[in-house]
Image (cartoon, rainbow, N blue to C red; front, top):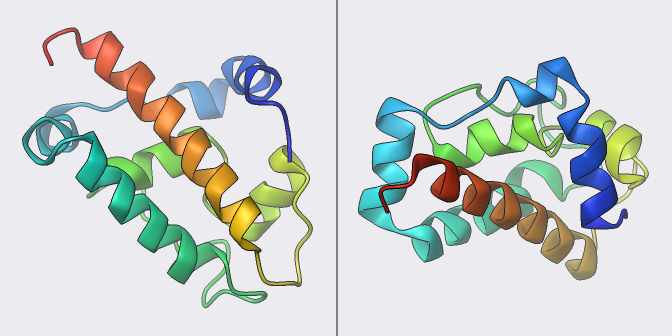
Length: 122
């Protein structure tokens, strides 16, 4: 797992990761449901879609839109086990432990907080 400041510095240098921002329905969803609810959804997505040693459809399990967390997962490279290994130094082929799942939750929380600040109208 990486230091969050270090991670976000590297994510900012990636043209692909940097293009993901919350807009429209995803931003409205975050406004209406609130950060705590969206983070509880994130924890559930992490547990069900990333934590297994061999997730179903790994590499394709995270949609690009439809929920603020999905957008955030792509923005922060928390979208599949390959990206977790490359960007977060979390090896593939074994179940994520509670500490790793909590770390991913913190990564997504930081990104969502940045989106809230960028929107400026929360």
